Image 1 (cartoon, helix red, strand yellow):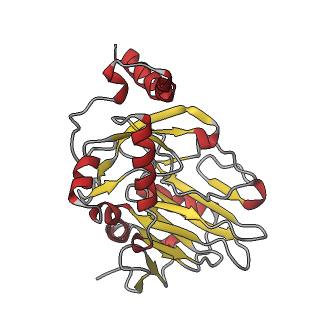
Image 2 (cartoon, rainbow, N blue to C red):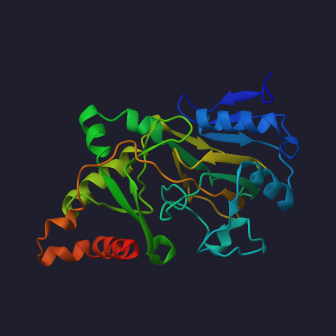
Length: 295
């Protein structure tokens, strides 16, 4: 018997809303069912949740170890495991992104509580990165599975924080291929020249935003959302006036596994240098630092 019988799909590809559930009372086998539903629908919404910060943290901890945000301080509250964004403090995530992909182990999932919201506007969009990959032609799929990409935290004013992830990762629960690049944190394709990377990365980051893979959610106060960071991106529509406050807990990620091992070297390994090599300095510096760490 399902613990979550009142489930309504939001789109064919992604998202489901679950009503008449008190998240404070969800535990045991219901948590396992939620994990399965999250892998299937990728984003889950729970309206009418009157939860405290302590309730929020306790619910998040049922899915794993929680982490605070590495770079952004909470404007109104002091809690190591809660990440708060308030519009009055500039907290509007209006660029498509998967959370914290500049980390070696990015966030596994996020759980958000809509604390305050404007009367009109401030919707959030999510997109399904599994569906986005499946919709690519077979030649593009094959090429993507041989590639990796450099991600950094320059949007947080920390460009020195960076890592490399496969362009197509394997989802650890479903084993599906996931198109894992985003316009916010992904800087370049490692195996491509700068010009090639600019064009191809723009294509991929635009591709994942297609309406066919996406949903748009109109919030109500005290709705809780949870999403799988391993297979989604999201975007806040910056079209509102007034305060919009969200509080979020983030479950620490797992190690990313490529869907296929690449046989290509990084672009800068060709040993050729010219005036255009300045575009490769970030990648060269990162790879050099990794080499020194290993030796």
